[in-house]
Length: 478
Image (cartoon, rainbow, N blue to C red; front, side):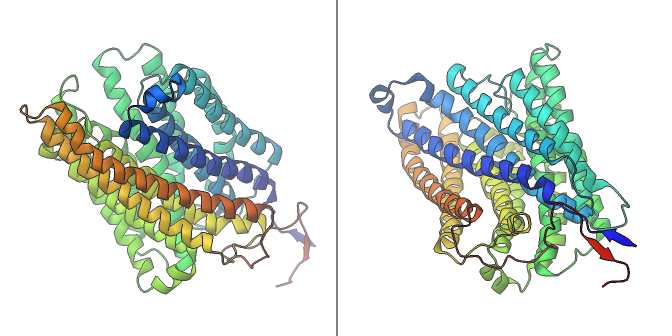
């Protein structure tokens, strides 16, 4: 009698397509981001390069779109396509269909890119694309989400529970939020102030019910595996999961400006943000002990190094959101560059570092490659970290100075602009450094896929892949 060893190689093509797209969109977005900052610093560029489709009004929403849906989401889906079969023990089927869905996701990002460059953004928060792009995202997600949901199968008592819970919440939140936003915002069902509220809710869904749970799937799965330590309290983890899924959709209302948004809704957003901060502190209580005394391992393992920075960025991002939710702070920072600081912390520092760590940890398990000991690993980490620190701190300081000046009627707008210029210079330096870090990573990434470097043994955090056909094993063989 024989038993079959499960194969995970059918998802390799889909994962490769998603990760290649993620790296490519990150490089393009980084270049366009530098160009948009240059336009703020040097307004004369609009006259030197009078090209309408690279104006700041189009580049700003375009870079956010590319980073959110092209870089982070595509990357998360790629690494989860590698990870989920390994924690569930259930291999994917129909590899060609998964690969086609991955291509459709990249086509959707490409169509959104062309639409924003040609016609401009729709003006909707976190939805600057048209209905056709929404349809493509839905079509791709139906296939990819169905494949990822296989990780929820078999017994809930077997394998890690918290990653499955966060995956379940994310898989439900994305289509629910995107479908509801499409109906209410473009279907004419949310007129006036209700439409503004729905935009804030949808923005919260994207970040706090879709991307944050996916990042937590990776943190709760990979950190225990890489450090060899289990998560402490399952009951505390489940309580934090309930709080995250319940409260995550309302955080955006705490940052709503005074005006058409009712004051009670803003107050509810403030309370929600503070309560969610407690849940984040609980998750930090579970995850931080995994890294205690592991600094030497962080130096040796680039994957663990990025995941550690991602964990601290997770705590810093939601502490920052809780601080901004305070009424006095919110009134000062409304309509300032503090919003860009928040985006940098969440999108780049938290999600980006977790994604990089997951790629370093999981790609060898899928492609049977090892990351060589190469200077680009160090360049990627330090240039990205230093660049993000400069960007976030500069935007935060610029936003506070800008808010204080805007609240003083005696300060003219020309003086406010002069306040921002030094901070924008340091932002530009940080963006260039981060771009160099991504270029270094992309060089290593594509060269490793093409096996241009000498082979290095991968970190064995999961069993290696087997051939496409299951291999028979005699009963009783150990």
